[in-house]
Length: 462
Ligand code: GLY
Ligand code: MN
Image (cartoon, rainbow, N blue to C red; front, side, top):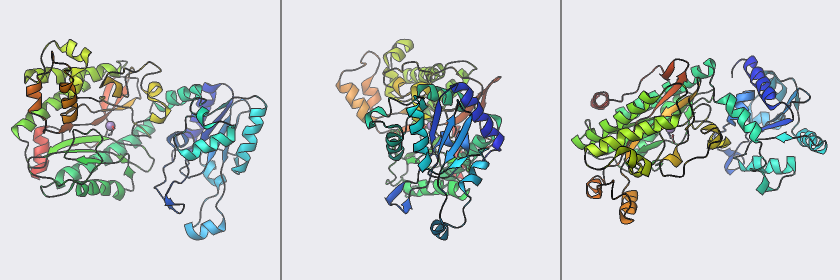
């Protein structure tokens, strides 16, 4: 938790941005796995953490902008709870650390909100993503389930995004800890892989590094020999000589700030000639994206720079043909990169994705529906304090190849016979975390993970 002044200032700024009304912010509850006392790891809501810092379940907060009041609602543990859990600070003690002077029992939240509604006051809330918070909103604000998303406050979404998207110096310190933890996770994974192991053994080792540092993973680990499947969470395969291994994993430190890195490396100690060829192309796309980074440049241009690099390289080995601009405009290049080049990162690994990509990554601008661009989570101009990932990849997805070829798609741009020769290649992604500053882009983290062919082969040879 930061010093209480940080939270006081954040809430003051939010109240100024809102101008009037009642802001309702719900924390997260414990989430049972199979019965109430056997829960998933507790994760506080990131916006609640941002404004209050209190990492504790079953809390809600109201910022009454008109009356300059801030109240946290929650119930203290009873002696029965404390017998099982050990001594616990009271809610009043916890909220004091966030600079809040009023804590009330949960039951009083409904009374307060119902009174506000009776007075015709506007109650602003964010779109909920947990079922229990949807239920709470139904009862607290007399909403039908179908109305909950639609009646969430765009004014509040935009105010929160405008604050959370600009990372302060103290947040960058925490994010760099998350990136450094992620580097440690990747180095451990890259060092251990041997033919005959399972993907699960690698995933377990990567997880161990996060846990041993008293951290968590920032999203479920991708540790796979089928890197062409973009979010592959299956860990049941046995690694064999000749495979490429894709590791996409990030650490979340105690303050809950995240890192997010991807690496691709051979299960053997060296790449094959064909793997090296495509790996070098993926690095060139990565560098093209980094070279395109500049203050106020739309991230869409950064994405398109990576796509251009991949397109040119695919033309150079005869998999694509024709005019590069026309290929990119048609979307044919998305055969090899059907995803986006990066996303915002912070307290969430895809920062604020629950508030809507169109507000977080596009400032309200319509998203493209074209394959590739439709999965680009960030397109807007980069401002100082923006933190984001750079993660172009090259993927050979047999199902996509077969579908498009079967439909007779892109025959003017794709040499299907040549592409089919790569149908068992797999996928490659490298990912690093960057921030934009007044003077240009800056890679985050004090540790650096192996990336070039030489660096990767050196760590693989141990
Ligand atoms: N690293 C996982 C993702 O960005 O989707
Ligand atoms: Mn990512």
